[in-house]
Image (cartoon, rainbow, N blue to C red; front, top):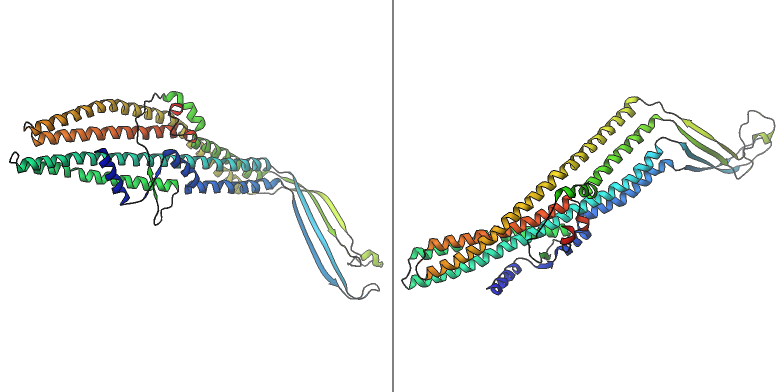
Length: 442
C-alpha cells in the first residue's frame, strides 16, 4: 500500500510541476546566495564604502588648479607686436581645526557597520522565511499523504460495502454512508495540496529560484521530526542581547544619530585652514599696469606664491543649526526608545516560546497513545463490521477519530519545528544554524 501511495503522489505531482529535490541546508545556502533582498543589502554595503569616503573627505586637503592663455598686442614702452602668453594658478587648503572632523570620521566608520548589520538582519530574516516555508511544505505534504492513505482505506471499505449490498447483507444506506465518508476527505486533501503548492512557491522565491516558464520548483526532502528539548529561557537572555542582529543594528543606529548630531552642531565652531596660493608664468614680456612707473621692467608680470592661514566663523541663525540639532536629538532618542523596547521584549518572548514548546510536548505524548488506541479501534470495528456486529456509524466514528489524532500528531510536530525556528531567531542563532547541529544549538 505504501508503494502504491508513493507512486500516486509522484504521478500527481509530476502532472502539475517539475520538482527539484532540496534539503533544508541547501535551501538556506541558496537563500544566502540568490535571495533578492540579500543581494540588495550587499549592494547597499558597497554603497556605504562610498558614503564613508565622502564623510572622511572633510579632513582631506583641497586643491584647485587652473590656467589662462591669450595674446597681448599693441605698443608699450618701445615694444610692439603681439605677445602670446599663458600662466597657471593654484590654490591649496588644508583644514587645521574643524569641530566636525572627528564626528565625520566616526560617522563614516559607523556607516559601514550599519550597512553590514543591515545585511545581517536581512540574511537572518530571509533564512527564517526559508525555514518556515520549508517546514510548511513538509507539513502540508504530510497532511496530503495522510489524507490520501486514509481515503484509500475508505475506498476499500466502499468496495466491501458494495459487495455486501450486492449479496443482500447490507442496506443501500450503508453503502451511501461509506461513500460519503470517503468523499469528505476530498476537500481536505485538495486544501493540503494547494497549501503545499503555495509553500513551495514561497520557498522558491526565498531561494531566489527562477519562476518563469518551465521553471523547476524545489521539492523539500525529508520529513518533520519531533525533537526532545530542554530549553531554559533565563539562561538565553544574555546571549540574545549580545547576538541578535536587529539589536546590534539598533545600537548602531543610536550611535549614528549621535554622530550626526555632533556634525550638525559643529557649525557653531570656527574653522581654521592653511592656505597656499600662487601663479606660474612660463613666458616673460607680459605687462600690466603698475601705476605709471617710467620703468618698463616695473610692469613685467612675474611668478608669485603666497601662504598663510584662513580663519572663518560663520554667524548662523540659531534656528538653522539649533533646530537641526534638536531634530537630530529627537531621532536619536527615538532610536534609543526602540532599542530599549526590543531589549525589554526578549525575556517575555523567550518565556512564551518555552511555554509553547512545553505545551506542544505535553500534547504530543497523549496524541501518540490516542493514535495507537484509535488504530486498534478501527481494526476492531472493521472486524465487527465484517461480521455484522458494528454499524456504519461505528466505522465512521472510528475512522474520524483516527484521522483527527494523526492530524493532531502532524500538527504538533510542525508547531514544534516552527517554535524551534522562532527560538533560533529570538536568540540570534541563525548565523550558526544547521539542520545537523540540534544537539549543539538546542
